[in-house]
Length: 365
Image (cartoon, rainbow, N blue to C red; front, side, top):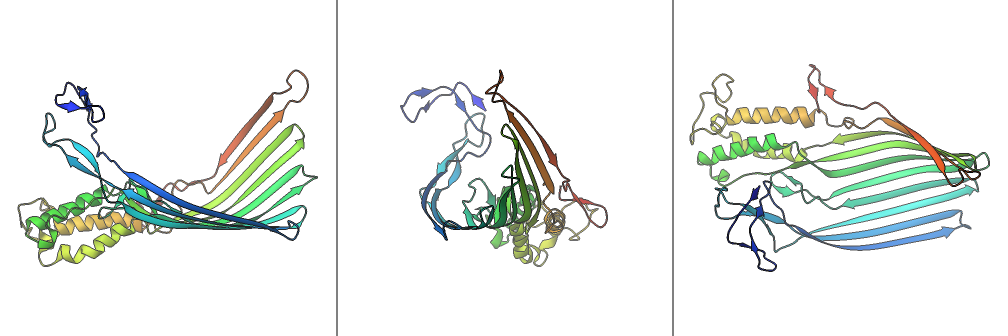
């Protein structure tokens, strides 16, 4: 929102008067991260370079100053004031380690065998919050890969074949939570208005969710040089990526508070009704009101369809296989000397776009 003219505003740096201001509609943020990293790498060759080992170690420590939003006094046309960010004076610490180990063996001059392992730590995203309002934690992962490299046809063809396995835990993703926020905050407000002491002042917030992911597959790359001027590169990969335990923190929140939400006659409390107003029945689709019991049932059904039923299935949208072909020809003689021409082709295999349950409903989209 652009507001002009405005009075009483000055530039905080040089004190000059400001006549125009731009007001963001979203929640503003002012954060700061201080990262300290220690990195160590050791590599050694053995048996006349037939065996090469590598070890890596990285430690990261992050101090984060989070942001909260504060409103100014009401000012036209913003009757509730304008949100502006305030950075916290106290920092939060996050620590993590990444370890890598690698091995390359050459039993023959034309053959190389390799193996790599890494356990990784990824800094938490500062824009994702999960129920009940906490910032998403750091994610952790582990990768194993092994394979072979070898030349053929007097080094005119070079091949690499790799198999890999990857796991990632507590990966944060944006979106997919607004319906649960509406339901939960409606329940908490209704309970607070009914005089439930545990609900006084309670609200929840989230803009994302957590999940775990595993992936395994193989990759093949061929580099061919039919002539000194002509090069062909072909790569093929196939993978299987599985998402699991998605939104587990949301499911756990409902499980944790179910007893409080439904104790006594609370299941019959009417959402956004008058304080303490009870419906005749906890569940009645024809009475024109929505109770705590009905809100819980709707939220639970949505959780079941969106996250629980697709648990442990292939990730949506990722091709099960793909391939790329690139070629390049360089002119070394004649009028075209110094020029090159090339092209490429790309193939993508089938993708999983949705899942259908036993009664024909589409899930996971």
